[in-house]
Length: 138
Image (cartoon, rainbow, N blue to C red):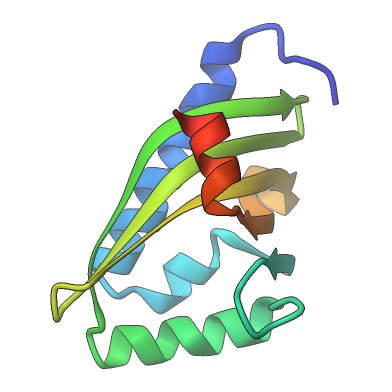
């Protein structure tokens, strides 16, 4: 992937997508939330799983929304790894706060792709190790 002529454009796309992920989770709007995630998504790096696809991700989100498990999701710092006019790979630090007050913090590497209808959707996500997160998001 080559660099976009305007990094600001990629940053804006990422910011809008992250805002939509947080907003749809806060509103517990399962349909809108999952519309931001591609049917071909592949999530790796979750302990105990080789990879997680769309159906498992959708079922987990639905369950978490129904029992109101998540209080807040936050993203801090974005580093663009690569971008084209239809793909953007970036790293960010994700904090998920449960309603019982526990926090899960992790670095995530995300790949957004422009899909049908001009919608940016997550096609890949990788949970990063603590060492890798510290290296890239220090």
